[in-house]
Length: 85
Image (cartoon, rainbow, N blue to C red; front, side):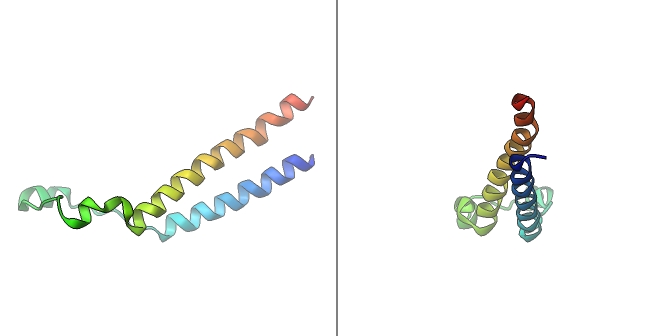
């Protein structure tokens, strides 16, 4: 096992743990879309307009970005040794 593989494994492990913590810290999405349709609730509220700036939205963006980085790191750790031969 080369040094690059060990460093890659540590990076993958760290990213995985961070993503797990971020996912657990996010609130669950409610399934009240049918209730809103029946009661006439409006999505044009202040919260609806500023939804991208909330804590949940920021956590979602960070989680998505770290997931992409994790995917790239896993590919890199598995592809780089093939070209070293």
